[in-house]
View 1 (cartoon, helix red, strand yellow):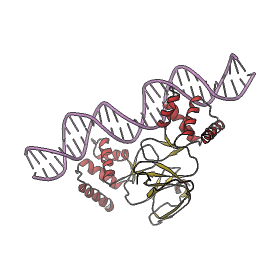
View 2 (cartoon, rainbow over the protein chains, first blue to last red):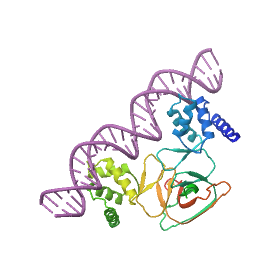
View 3 (cartoon, each protein chain N blue to C red):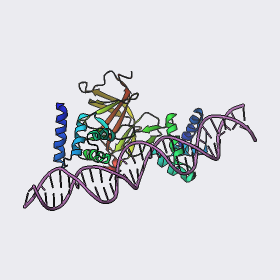
View 4 (cartoon, rainbow over the protein chains, first blue to last red):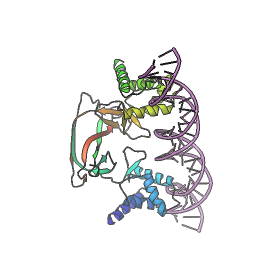
Length: 143
Length: 143
DNA sequence: GAGCGAATGCAAATGATTCTTATTTAGGTC
DNA sequence: GACCTAAATAAGAATCATTTGCATTCGCTC
């Protein structure tokens, strides 16, 4: 509850910094994002938002969420599936996906070491800046 | 050249094993897949294939490539971007993506070690079966 | 309160993919 | 080689997620 309010305030604050106008539509979207599941689709947000703001247009939700990605308030979540998911967790983290039920858990890693097989990996002098780890398996529920 | 023929023969062989019929359309698709870039979209294959088989329908390419995934002749490649990419490289490997030009290199890893931050990662008793590593950075060309 | 540019709603456009249906065909059988 | 059947195909309609164009509305600054 308190945490959600904090999240909401953070969103409002950041959005002001970026020069975004505080429309009621945007406020509803912000609040829903600060309250709900991290790995949301536009439609999930839209369905919830329209309950309290019935004349809301899906296009507005699309526009706002993409804009939030541009301004760093959200990130795209690259998971398989038909529609884009967004991540409200801006901390560096990775994901575990259950291949049976599809549930997604956030995973935080203290360290990652990997060793290239140089004979087959032809990165040339490419510079690696970040890595994104997807763990796959079976969650506790599905075991 | 020889290698492409090998790939093609492998595809034809495997497809026979799976009970797929050798239609001319399928042969064209197989050959193109054995010749071209590993990380293709359906449309890339379709555009090439229609040159030599003009009455080919895109739906046929979609159906065939999905079927090849089902029978293990191709895998889905989870990259960002608007359309599905397929990977003809069936060896276990990972990917490097250049964030500037989008080029994708295959990466082979001898080992990967990672350490969970248990205090924040709530996997419960989930069982991790595989991991998929995406390296991001800048390729040699773009540096 | 006026003015301006940003934001919105709506509906049409787009793009990728899937589905439907009538027709054709590969591959086994005699 | 003719025949049969299930699988495969072409063509186009349907679907689904997303984007765009445009006329209108509305925060925000002065």
